[in-house]
Length: 428
Image (cartoon, rainbow, N blue to C red; front, side):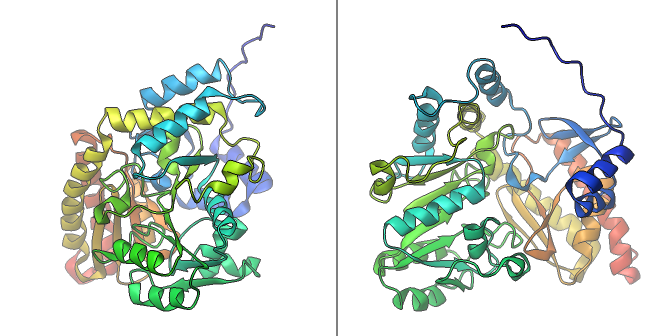
């Protein structure tokens, strides 16, 4: 069988694209696109995104996906090879890419986590963890205020934001939220449900605005889970695979969970994929019955190739160390720039590795600074669970030219916006 090459698509201009978004996707999404400048992204490489008018932007956003940058050669090589041989499996026969990807992930996971279930999104991984917990008799879920675990029904129950939950109630029963960083509050809850609890926690809360817990907090959580017979699920969908300057955010506390959730960076920025990595004893029900929890595209060879390529890229380019070192330099420089312009309007500039947040003391500046940064050629993100925080999650492939571009753009953007919020300082 031969195929005829397709002619390149003639892409719609920005006005036609806006119409298609409004009529076929979401009017709200179309409005957001206009708010952020109406740019149309058409290409990407490394730390740069190119728009239809030929302009390039430094990508410090992407919600944590692009740790390896866009189209990293190691990822593209694996994916291209698989695309041209066997992109989707029958799910009847054994298939090598899934086994090799699982083995690669276990090789970098905390010790003792030996079983892997692949999925297509972070929320799917969360749902899988909830079901694994149920098979172990842990039916009482405990999560944290401000935490973000996705928006499917089970994951949404754990996500600590009523704005997203209220339109879809009732959610899963038997779920409790406790303040993040408060081990005492967690003790109180777990003491009432011995042997029934399953705790979901992020090493750093991303969507809450890069909230870093007190030193030793994760170790306390792990100790409480052991004391009261609860399962510990670490949601490292956004923090894992080097984003925080360590392979896993929990490494700093020496914590090994019962279940680890992985995503975002596992895709290599090319093919969506997530995973649940669990202790074998927690995985028993799935070992016994492989049809107990399935998905048609779970472990698809194309996604598995991307995952293998991502792990190879992170290892081969030492991106974990780069995340730590670049992040430390960025944190100091950005803190100096932002506080120099905004002064007391800034509450804190904080971060770990390449997850950084700029928190303001009042509503307004975070959103305005995001728009101003885009106008100056830098993509960043808002925080879904905190309107006070502008968030940066850049790739670990930034070079010195990229960093200088970022600092200059941040300086210009802050100078412009600070004049609105600190008029007596003239934005200086």
